[in-house]
Image (cartoon, rainbow, N blue to C red; front, side, top):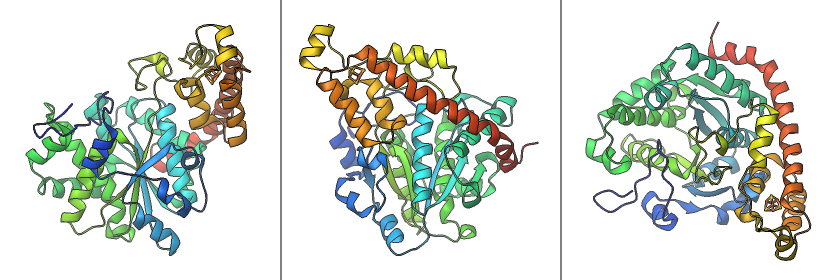
Length: 368
Ligand code: SF4
């Protein structure tokens, strides 16, 4: 989609795919991260494997790391569904940045869940997902003692900031960044998001200091608006890292609740996960004979994506999967079985950890 100036419009709430990355990068001030990789002392698998592939203005963060200065990372989740493969991406990133020394700010975005998914704030559903989602990220390793975790609707500073920002932005500016929205609440939710993004720079948290926001490229509009407003308010324009989007298991361009076969949640029954992986799009050839001769194409395979993005830490093991595929040594049926074992093992351990963390999640969110 394009606006009147023929710029590419990305809808952070929609299902559109990116049609021209180079042009998008130019319009949103995004650069490839590769030239900066040597500056990261600890190479996380997302950096090594090119999953985090681009950034906006990451230098202030790298300088803060090198000079032992305070910096933050902010991310969040809409309490609108169970933790799925997409939520796992940003959760892994926030844990990664915490391990690098950043202070995490983790927002339970219940206002956005209302605007976007019509889940009323404080409803049983909203509260249940809030607890559940938080227990998930705690199980993935977020240290709550060194993080600021909050519900968007309860954080007064965010609300106040959103009001202030509302006075500094015009409707035309919002339209240029987000496209025409008939639901004005989405523009308001965008301003609340800017409130979240700039919250770590508030004086009550010792700000201003550099903040990095790990997102998918579809969230670039929020970063652009936040950076524009930060400049006006004499804050440090937030940095961002961009990850590749995990595409739907069923072959769809984006994982979506509307296509249940395109994703699975970390709470899902083993039989259901198994079925989804068994039915996933692969890079296999039309016949077994052809695949043995020509090899498969892991770069087109959604099963390979699962282990590349999330479920295999060891690069050597991942390389073995790739070579077995490209040489036709292992065919898709056998390969899927191995991936299913790896995924189910992860999910089982995760569920055990998570179960024990629900009480802590409730306590952090002050929910009785
Ligand atoms: S062998 Fe494995 S990695 Fe290769 S295309 Fe088949 S399922 Fe994908």
